[in-house]
Length: 94
Image 1 (cartoon, rainbow, N blue to C red):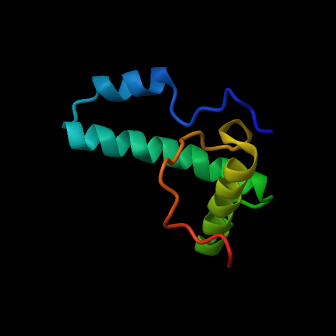
Image 2 (image 1 turned 30 degrees about the vertical axis):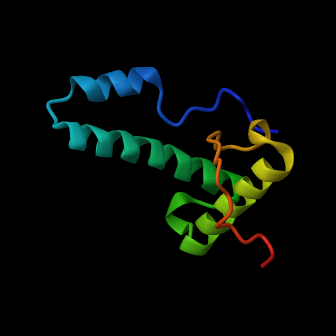
Image 3 (image 1 turned 90 degrees about the vertical axis):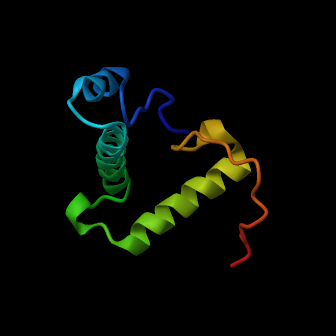
């Protein structure tokens, strides 16, 4: 099971973005970029590689693994904690 306190954007970082002289869409993109950078670093560490060496295929496979873990063991067992209520479009029988 993964660290339940893992955050990809802290309240303090979000507050810093709020203070920035940016439009609302720019603030959203800034938050997304900050959290994505942290998530990519987490994925790279999990896969024992560097962020620069991550491939699209590795990132997709990592998301699929996390999604499968969530479906089989529950949200608390996954890294990404959102819950999807409609999973009908997912074919896990590949």
